[in-house]
Image 1 (cartoon, rainbow, N blue to C red):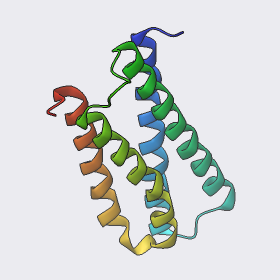
Image 2 (image 1 turned 120 degrees about the vertical axis):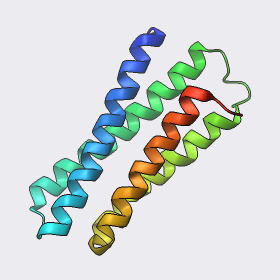
Image 3 (image 1 turned 90 degrees about the vertical axis):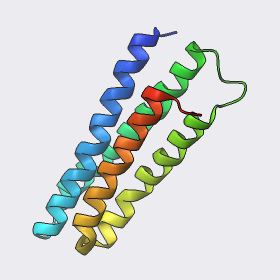
Length: 121
């Protein structure tokens, strides 16, 4: 079993990978036709980032011993995780929405950080 700090590092690395892949895909798809190899790499990075965020997030919840009844802030973060997970499909299918999706990702990331730091409910 990993320490809380180790889970936190894995969680943050997953977040970095998630936003790196989504941001790269938004930029690449809005500029030109994206190379298949790069699209595949970005998709893999996105999926690995999502898995790392989920694994480490639940690991941290277990370390805090709050797995029995998830608090509202944790449920909110799960909803944000689902939205960011589905965001890759929107980026690929609607490249013309690039600017909107870019700012939506930023808002979702900020909201997730707020929920994690302040645990308002």
